[in-house]
Length: 211
Ligand SMILES: C[S@@+](CC[C@H](N)C(=O)[O-])C[C@H]1O[C@@H](n2cnc3c(N)ncnc32)[C@H](O)[C@@H]1O
Image (cartoon, rainbow, N blue to C red; front, side, top):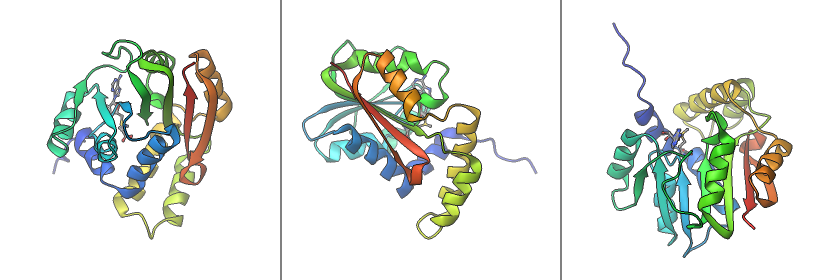
């Protein structure tokens, strides 16, 4: 019997419905200081749950993703919200548009994260904030499996498998410590760097302000 091919859009739509993932996405927006009335860009928004969540708090949020099938899904889930197909490396916005620019779990696997960070800075207004969320230096498949076992009461079996899959992708790409992130943010022209972990230390938020 042949197995069904892996469908990333379907997989991530399921990920977005899990409480632990949504808490981390919402946590990134809180860490960024996003508030009602702000204009916010979510780079690599996937199936769009964070964008919808932000609108629920009276934030004008726009989701951008490079995968048009992902955005078809976002529109089915959250049809009223603005979603745009585009590349994180060449954001289709003029400079100084957003109060906060966010990217959750995107930069750590891209070939040129520095380029994307520069683009995020470009489209953010002076005084605005750039915030990312990625696996931390402590992430590994073993650590993720331990996390899933420790939190088995709060995580369904899909969430438990997902966190280990995600750790595998982190191991094959990047797991950033705060010093490396601080250097990246400095190089991108950001000031007031701050970073903090979530997920018992396995994931890391990082933010900086555009002067
Ligand atoms: C791991 S998912 C994360 C989705 C969402 N931000 C989250 O935290 O759940 C990464 C997303 O980035 C998108 N993506 C990957 N490379 C991209 C690029 N170069 N430009 C724009 N989007 C990209 C993918 O299509 C996918 O939806």
